[in-house]
Amino acid sequence: MDQVRRLLCDADPAALVDVDPLQTGLRISVQLTTGELAGVLEQAGCVLGPLAIQPQPSVCCGGCGG
Image (cartoon, rainbow, N blue to C red; front, side):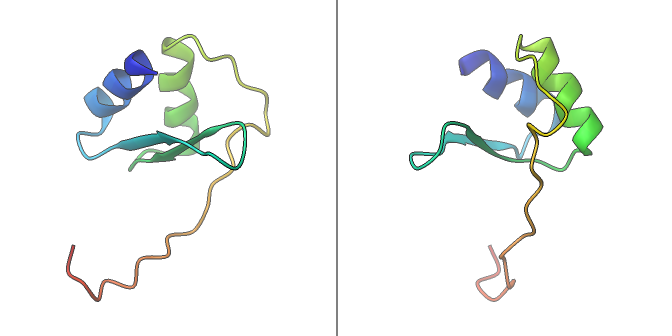
């Protein structure tokens, strides 16, 4: 997990990574394309199938300014 976090933060300094407690997977927030994300995860030793990355829309309304 540390290597995944380090490589993602190298690619996107604002990257966020955590374990999803309700599912077997990671939640990753980055400003990378799906292909770029797959490449970074592959560098970290994570071999992914074609459906492993499931992009989700942002739920940020921008109201808090954060």
